[in-house]
Structures are given as structure tokens and as C-alpha cells.
Image (cartoon, rainbow, N blue to C red; front, side):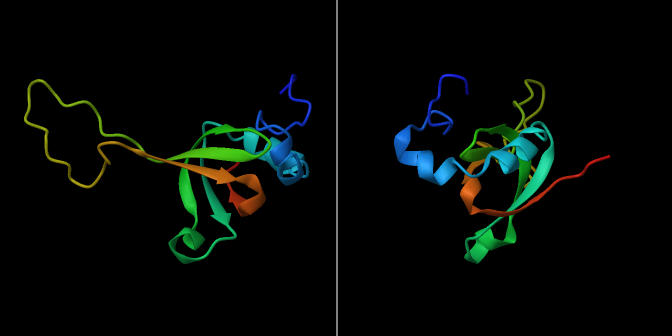
Length: 109
């Protein structure tokens, strides 16, 4: 970000120490915007299994994954108010700090 003297994705000086050493990883992640990726974090519990989703945005501090797409619009011709488990009606987004990523998995063809 050209006008960001701290190079923290607009988060300012408070995040400067947390974000300054992740340029290489941020560049690798940025190359995969629009692709489905899996990210493993340093956390435990259920989040330790990783997050898989569509990578939609990144800066030098965070990534944004759409982990569950929203449901398609209801058809005006059919009664489609029931959800069969394929779609979350509201969708889900995960914002993950880059300094918590321990593995970034993507498919390169």
C-alpha cells in the first residue's frame, strides 16, 4: 500500500511490529487470490484442523477466506426455502492474521 508508511495494510503503527516480517508470505498468498486454499494456524482445538476456503483478500497482516458461500437466491418458481446442508444461508468469512499461519496450502498447476 503506497501511502502506508508502516506497511501494515492500513492498520497503523500499533500493528507495525506484528506485520513487518511477513512480506514474503503475504506476496505468496497474494498470488493465490481467487483460488481455494487451506490455511493451518498455530491455534488449537477445532481451528487446528485448518481453514479451507476461497481466498478473497490479503494485506501484509491478514488474509480473508470465504469458508462457506452464501446460499443462492431462492427461485421464484420453486419452493426452495429448505437448505440441504450444501450452503449456509448467510455464508462465513474467516479473517486470519498472517503471523498465526504455520502452513499455507494451495494447488499450482
